[in-house]
Length: 330
Image (cartoon, rainbow, N blue to C red; front, side):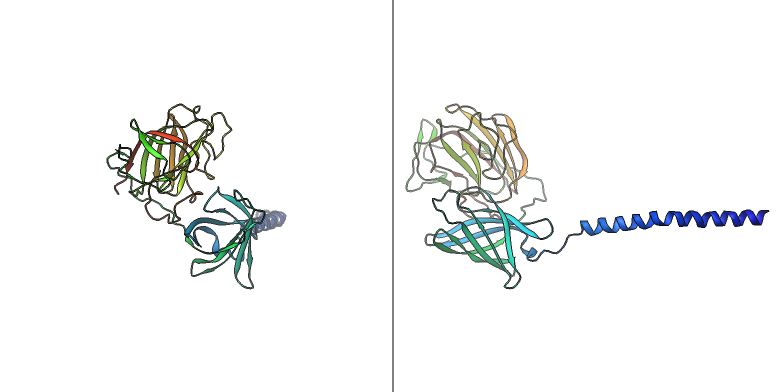
């Protein structure tokens, strides 16, 4: 009887194994299908994926730009572009020709009064972009290098804060078409004129500003001369990256904390690497967010280098009662 019982148990095990086999096969095929669907296929031209600091050669000298290329789905390259003016704009398709290893894309004009799309074509050679841009009827040579990540390994050590405002405007390079002047201890831009740029450059920094503007006015503070924090009459407007305190074209505030035109307002900015925090009128509206690249109107695209503070004067009137900077010393 014991032998028959063992035989019966063995036969039961075989039957159970056979009945479980279809389930095991199904699970295996499912896992294989999942792995295949989640594999990252090679996209022709994917060597250019990433962020790039661009430089254009013009008759007036060099002009900055910024480009991001990323993969969308299985086989498409898309991206974003920032030129010498305007906000970051989406690129619906970056076309890569395997035949001649050339990239190209086009985007509609933004602030330029023209019908023709902006057209770009370039190659990637030894990690350097080389090509040209057709803007209007003019063609500009273009080069680009990978943008640095600006990661900070050590905690920031802050120096002593000091004011960028004095009666002699001694911290500023005065432009030829300057409309800024000191009036009763306040730095005032009366009308549309030149941008005001510090004669010192900064890396990581904290900046406090007390400012006001008349109704409908528009200005901005550029960190390292490359990243614009918006100063604009936007009281009561819906939240977007163009309102007061936004990083132009990139980061929108969490709330609209702006006051009405004509009232004094405060802004405290902390900028470390690419990470920015903005506190407007006591409310944190951007909290330790990454600025992906330069904004329109930047002085240059050399993101790995220190840069000045620039106050936009070419859009509208603005007054600053306080501009106190605290530079990092490490």
